[in-house]
Length: 197
Image (cartoon, rainbow, N blue to C red; front, top):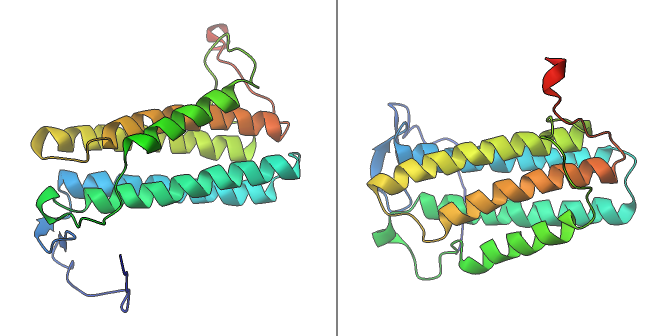
């Protein structure tokens, strides 16, 4: 798909409407716009995670590169998901990239590989663990919000067949990644202790 962005502003959205990929005008607060807007927000938090990973010391070069490669792949996939959500099924181009079952399977494989090196949990993890871990925890919560939005959209309109499974599995991966990054960057992981409240 050829993408051309010649102008940053068009004035077309000044009255609270925007265009879907097929040209349909919809309110900016519609569930579909909320869905792909939240996916976009998630992508931005992954960008913060990648920047923090480059700047935070402690991890080996191999771990820095591995985490960056995983996050970059996720960012590309989230753009594909956002594009799909911004397109009504009738307007989807045959070559338009969409989330497929193989993407969900890849998330599961990555979760299993990373989780093997982590200690077993005995309680819930408090968000934190250095800047990389903290940003990944934030990404996890934004991912869950995106999943809720897409679930609401799916009740009203058709969405990609694997969109919800992808977001569900992605939030699991982001949790594991936050733990893996904290361990890699030698940051402490704080477990929830109800007695300390």
